[in-house]
Image (cartoon, rainbow, N blue to C red):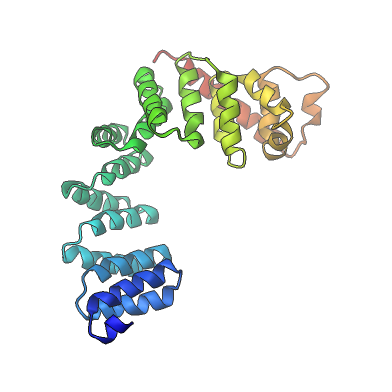
Length: 287
């Protein structure tokens, strides 16, 4: 405040950053705007970030574009992220490519994710590989998962996911390592690793992990989890329909299982079973 009083325009931007970090958005906005009025170019980018964090996409876009016009390279990447979150894929692609051209390495991985979500697997692979070459660890996991979902390159997927695990020890994504190892016919320490993964993410959504185990014909493993003394009750409560489907897939239809499944959810359970069987056939194909 004293520096501002003495005419220090940079202090306007810095005070706004202080307020933003304190969650005082209104005050931050006020001082960013004053800093911009005084010609502080960094404030354009910072105000855009403030608006983006507030979900004010139109205002964020306006100031990112102004920041880009003034030569702020980080704004290219952030604007691309903003467009991605808005579902504006074409615009996002344009600005990711510009950010990459200006040396932003994170944009390589994010552009690959964009292509993955668009089903453009070849382009996604290209940019994941470039990101990996530049040291982006997230791209290792992302490319491994891309290969898994396509049922291609299992050995490379295993190499990348193991490298990711070695570098990060990210237990939240240990499930990906487990599934890709099973896909490659590796079952070493499966129970131990599964336990480690569940301990790390027991409060997260596990439906994808459990379903992937079923896709890899690990029906008994899933049943054992539902029977687990530590996790069984929670899994039953959260994934009841998946439990019914697993019992059907395991052939455990004794005790009138089909009659015990509530009729209003039976079609959904049968749909889960059909989709799992379809994926089991998909992964049974030669890689």
